[in-house]
Amino acid sequence: MASGKEQFGGKFAYIMALAGSAIGLGNIWRFPFMVGEHGGAAFIIVYILCSLLISLPIFLSEAVIGKKTGKGAYESLRTLAPGTPWKYLGIVTIIACFVIVSFYCVVGGWSIDYLARSVVGKLGPGTREGAGALFGSVAGSIWETLTAHLIFLGLTALIIFLGVQKGIELFSKISIPLLFVMILVVTVYSLRLPGANAGVEYLLHPDFSKIDASSIAAALGQSFFSMSLGVGMVVTYTSYSRNSNIIEAGSWTAIFDTLFAILAGFAVMPAVFAGDLQPEAGPSLVFETLPYVFGQMAAELPVFSRIVTILFFMSILLAALSSSISLLETTVSHLMERKGMKRGKATLLITLGTWGLGVLCALSFGPLKDFHLFGQTIFGFCDLFASNYLMTLGALAFSIFAGWKMDKIEIESIIGKFFRFMLKWIVPLAIMAIFLSNIFL
Ligand code: TRP
Image (cartoon, rainbow, N blue to C red):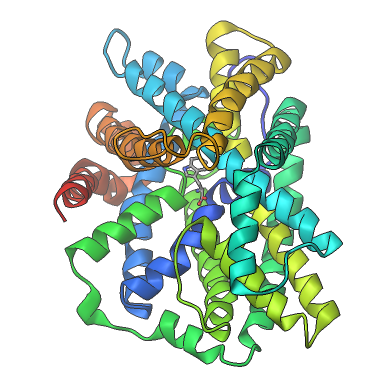
């Protein structure tokens, strides 16, 4: 065991931390929309198959590296393949985490802003235009958005500063069970709204004719993003729990993540249809559409709809926080390992850097909105660059490393013949297919 390295208290902590990283904004604002767009229940089946056959092996490729070395991605690759360029994959993953956490904290900040607003009852006049205008003014107001961003980043940094057991473990063990309870309450409420059936129909109607190459690519991409793969997070978390069974941990992560995504679908879509609105993906879904629907309901059930609104924004906040800590930890632990820094100093340095890039992302909804990189705002560019390209590249490289570079006998003794076969042949081909379809479809 690496000398004196911090560890999770046990298997439960490890799995909750992984589930926390996986469950995030991707589950709440992207998954429900994609399900509806790509054939309802048919897409859910494809998604589950992708998660088990492609994402789970990629998870295992990262986990096996962390289990073997007890280090983060960069140091692991340097140890396992000394003198080769593989260590640069470690650098790519650190950059990816840094970029993702920067823009992720901006959205996390909005969830704090909206949570505070729902507590004091300041979510606007309850009209559609009002909800849109409110989001525009929250995201566009420099002080409001930057203050909320700072608070969210500060919370993330605080948990990381407290360390693996007292920070990440404690937070995940409490917040993940709580998240499931809260989203269940919102789901039950949503399903009881008048007109909710259209939302259920949108999610469940199986339309196999909509399943084609592009919807499979969409399911795969969503599954990668949702399970937080390709950025070395799984390597880092597994290095804190080297004795755990990684197949079991990976399976639970996939199960919790998918279950939460489906529950979120039933929390969000019935409400969207009950409000007679069009489903859409992205920030406007949770920050414009739902506040409007819940606001309308406030007329009939003022107390209850207020509680549900608060629970809803609290779920988004906890889901975002448990993902952002895993991203920050991956970069902070890299500095600690590589430069021998203390946790406090490494956390401070990375937080300052993330704050800088985060401010630029936040301002791209206000004063910097006309500044474009490759046709995108700074926020949009960071999202596209890190979540589409760096993550996919990372996932491809990890699967090739574990499938082709690591010792066959040894890796089969940990993950078995089936998963090694998938890593060697099927996963790389599937990822390349997504890359190509992203470019050409
Ligand atoms: N999985 C998170 C979500 O669904 C977001 C995310 C993407 C992430 N990549 C990550 C989190 C890497 C941690 C590490 O919202």
